[in-house]
Image (cartoon, rainbow, N blue to C red; front, side, top):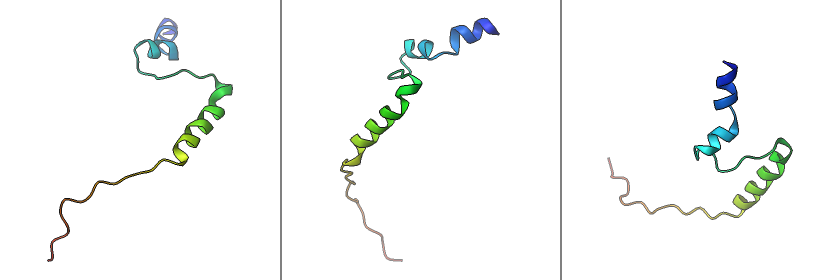
Length: 57
């Protein structure tokens, strides 16, 4: 069990399989979240036009 944990239950194994974008240290978590939220703060969301309106019932 210990060997399995050491091999597979770590972020570096997951990153090697390209399942993670980045590995951040615990002390970098808050600044990374703030940076991501600041990028999204002024994001313009556009909705696609409706193809059909509601039919009268």
